[in-house]
Length: 213
Image 1: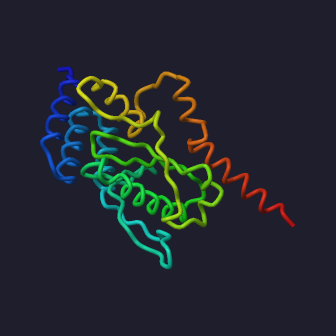
Image 2: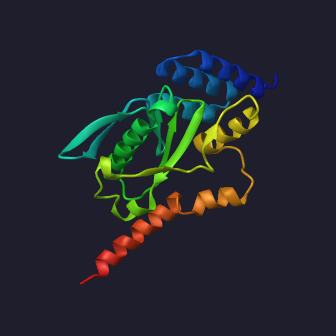
């Protein structure tokens, strides 16, 4: 029996709108994933990783005058998600949390290859370091890192874009469906807010520093 994913997402949206706690919303989202991808063993493994990654400890978060230890809401495959009850109220807090988690992870990794997402499970904001911060990611403290929204990649769920939401989830969390190459997607993949651009600038900075007398 074919899954009516639009009906599932509409039902999900109704449940989310009636929920008023962050933990409840996260559980409703996980339930949606299990329903959308029921029977897909590979995807089910990723969903399990999302659950296991909940409240993952991250050490070496660089904060002013001290090194802090924290827990990301969800961390797997270099995707860091900070869930909030309502992003309209707590987006600034979500950015601060993501900045600390990413910088902490970067201290134990050579490459920048992260997807940073702030979400209240209706609004999903993809974030990236400001271009002015890229060369100094290895030395910045949490309060110094500026994260900007990648507006073309972010998503706000409504009753009118449920099918688009399915493909957004697939693109950013699972990468299972083939995506049509559009100018917007090419810019997201290689533009100034992309991981490719950020890592290229970091590598060029390292090489420049190494060649200086």
